[in-house]
Image (tube, rainbow, N blue to C red; front, side, top):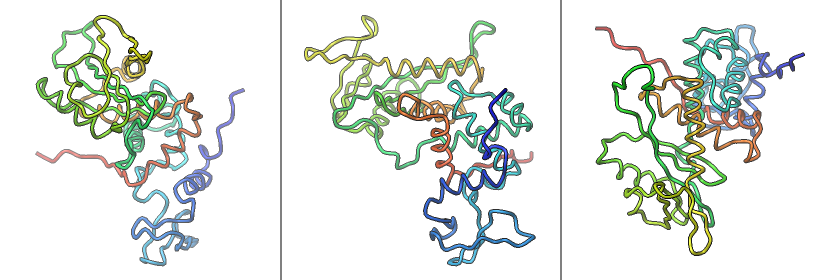
Length: 306
């Protein structure tokens, strides 16, 4: 028999209690004024469960205010289950599959998954990758529609991934034309790699003028080389990440628009950064994503009437 789902995935009250425990470990936090544990739970018959009254700013709030779950008609336990499914699927989960499992429309499932991907994106203060005694890898790749069934009409999309060996992953879409790629990548390296890290790249010339230790490997000759000190130089961790991302593209999503590529990158970065080899179970990974829902409200953007 299939294993029963945890109660937080089937019961609204249990889901709210779980989320409050993650986001409010020291008591309710008012999203309007930021005061901690100065709120009273409202328990009137006409009041929705989970609503608090801030005694400091005199405003009501709940645990979903200011998060990607705010103002959603989807039950909170369904949100938590969707977050768990997206966090535990190594190659992602399509909106069609998510809709079938949650019992919602495909449009709702798509929008939910986009909100969850926003929660997976690293915070602005997430810190740099690497550090003293650590090695980071940088590599770029391109993706596009398959040429097997129809001619390619649009140029491929490109992105660069920074991988802290044995640690986190951070990817960014490359926005500019071919001549400006080097500048974009160098800026990303300076912003996201700790300057005392050892950096490994391929032999591309745009990796040369960077202000920290740098080793490269010429992929036209080999994929791994050793320095005179016996250090292995390679970008195999980044290549492995690209392999997982592209299998997700081919096997699950089939297509990613350039408009939303950054959100899909955040999804795959997140799962790789909190993978099993780093000690994270599916439940732990989902809880990390739930902690990231605050301050990232995302709404439908409707086109203006003609």
